[in-house]
Image: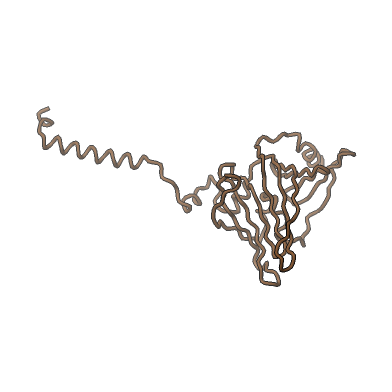
Amino acid sequence: MRVLSNPFILLTVCVWLCAFCNVACGQSQTTVPTDKQISNQTSKPTSPRELLATQPDFVADEILFSAEKRGSLGFASGHRLVFKKAKKDEYYRLDTGVVVVYTDAGNRSFKYDAKRKKLELDTEPDAKEDWYEGADNPLFFSKKQGVKFEVVGTEKIQEHDCTKIRATKEGAIAEDGETEEVYFYVAKDLKNLVLATEILLPNRRTSYVLTNVSFNVPAALFKDVAAKTTNS
């Protein structure tokens, strides 16, 4: 008690305690990780390709818009279609209102015939398909070889902050020198769901945008393809 009554010693102790508290508090503050630090976290996607390869299951409306170039007039107004889109495990499901098509990781398509209540193989993978085909199913597209994926910025899609990823194929350049590119917009607050996809070609522009997204996927949507693959 006599030591603490000394004003000089008391002041020194207080200064030391304040300094210690500041350091301790500073160390306890949450530090926002840099992009490099994020890339070193093995528990999360570590590359643009892995962001696409870790897509959550979902159901949504998919808006397809496509426009073609009309000579020197530029791109003419194209067509707009709305489908029902869903993903579960290793399958995508597209309901056009006329037919339901399932696509698997092997890029095979199964068409469900509602009248016959039968699921049949529609198309086998085409080895000669253009490199950008299938970009509307980003989980499968991420497995393509020879395609380069890179983060090129951020952008808002439907008020969601999205990571913008560009995909290019080496040597994929049109005769007029224009490049072929695919862009994916990954919504950070929607489990890294690819909310929009753009395919930019010299003579055509195509976009796919998901709306009314839900992560509650009814098992009934995939019961037909599940039974098909289980019995095959």
